[in-house]
Length: 555
Image (cartoon, rainbow, N blue to C red; front, side):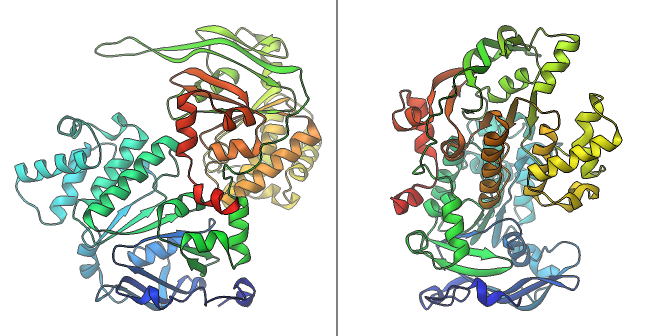
């Protein structure tokens, strides 16, 4: 156990890492003093966890807390040099820790089902979805083409996929993100497991689809009497959807209990920080700013895409979109997937041409600018993308990543660019010593700070942030949002903040634009829209936001 372990434990209440007497009643999954190491480095330090039959338990904690390692150990799928060095894992009467691969193979998918995080990487893009579900059934011993096909259709129908018989013959790319997640749920429940492990199953989904998936998952779990182990960094989802929350930090369980107890009387300092950082809707919107002159004006923006194939026509992704971003303020654009948010952002960045309408930066038209004016606009408007893992060149040093815009625009010489990189690292609160590291040597939060530093290199007036904090856990998210507040105050930046997280909107934005199916359905200050929404769609979005227990506990 690390030397500072005692400092991480609460000073009152029951020992947080040990199950209480109530927890010991008929556990389906019993983890005792589990220790896991990678090479010579221990990463799980004596984890205790019980999950009772029929119970819904959430494991929460920041990236690196040990959540995924614990799940991998239970499934005996530790990557690379990972190995169990101590403790035990029992599923019913079976000792998983001592089981060899021949014993574990039927357990995975049979007694334990897994819903992984990302359907885009966990479904085979070259196989029809029905065939992928059928593979799971055949692995469990089902035979007969007709019987397998009937069961595939039944599972897809049960998972809420319409026209299952027809859609079973389609490929993953022909489904939306929410529908792909439903397919993963169908695969996980195909063999009626006793324990279902859901590993961040909705982190990439907008709030309305997230609610649909969680509602459906809860219904299926209740119908089948399945025990649920829910792994998430979203404390709001955990509080709303489970019977017990287990908080992990640095490879240890530091606190556990019913959501009401955790939220109303957290014992551990880390749990208190998680609750404080959660952007629940009970938070206070920023005071309305008095800055008035517009820096970005969008008027009647239309973008149509020509469709190919049978029944070809046009798709209107943006339909008469109008809004204004005031200087040194933050305007959020919200809406579910397919609402047109990213299409508008791509037009404002000059990556797409509008079909009609205008977008002006300081009075200059983005769509018609050419030559020197176009280069000037691109210096003025810079992006920060969603994924800090994918938006940075993994082969370049941090210095090369940040100074790339300077090199592209021919700004300065090598020495002056190096000094500019050092200044930018200071601005985003990163040590100058990381300049010669590569992105894979940094944490997710550090990488996103690097992405922000790169966006600031050309001293822009407007940053377009496309889901810039959605891939981060709640504490790192709060750090990045605080950084953005500070940069706006010091540099007078204007932000267009595209997100599906309305809690984040409440935390950072001055104004909000609500989009649905390419149209703006509501636009106003955050306080106006959140406290007195005029459109039913806006009310539906607000109702779908997780974290109501947090809001009630904070009230």
